[in-house]
Image (cartoon, rainbow, N blue to C red):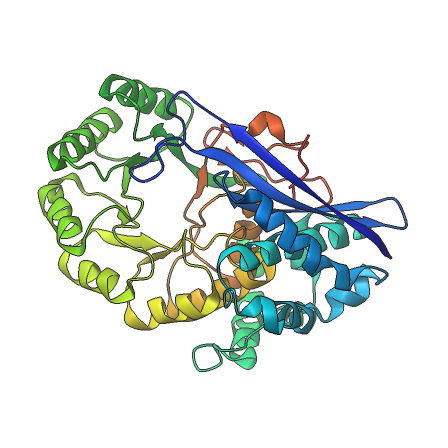
Length: 406
């Protein structure tokens, strides 16, 4: 039984150029945390990610939203969570503030993640293990398919799961092998060229064969020079990505792709404004073998549906701390699988929750085994920090979703 709800407004200045990109030069990594306290002494912790300002607004919205769950059993809530979540998302007055985006949707993300955390802790299972143990219909009951039935019906989602279940055993070895990571921290925007080159060498020594550079300078020559620097330092076999964090116009994104066409970039990420689906489609059509990755700032399944239908992204970077938590993340994962779009999440959680979700995506949906972003700057803030060995995430074993903060 959920007896009370508390929130925490946690902000972590990281300094030294860490986390900087073309738009966000001085980020404060922050979490709006919802805590669901149960009568048996357990606490479910859910996270939504912000960069500081406004974090308190998300906490206040989550407090208001969570009151409807007090004095209810978490197992009963989760047994029909898709319906519960839709009711929370469509509360008529708060819905006007979205719908399904902004502060209210971030609040729903934190609350949803807290529900999953409390449920899996109550059952004594890590999230990935519980997801794999669930019956397909019970899993689908935790999701809301409204507004996307034309792209993915519940029946089609069930078919994805049932078809993939037949070959699950072929993908179970990833639990022992670990899920591959890629290193985002080599190339933050404010780092010097020398620092970037040294970070690439360090990253390779730690076992990473994929890494990402922040671009989007007002001087395209700087971006091109640094992209060449990373390619030279990483070698021809490494996968190198470039991330503009929404900075460019459509024309500027295409120009950068043309200037770096010989570098074999694995993707160009968030090249322009995240609401510009048609702009992303135009970029995707014009940049040859380089692919578009997007989704970090896409707020809900409906917008993802439009991206998929428009063929505007080649890699889906949905984040369970921006959409409506784990449940909406799973809906987007199923929809991406139907459309044949590989899923590589953005890790606003520093990989704590997503390390569970990519294991489930690969084993239960047959999503390709690619890699998961790794950002180390908040490792010491988590009770059970994500651990990598030789560039691979070690499969977590603690009950829950991994979001407990010290």
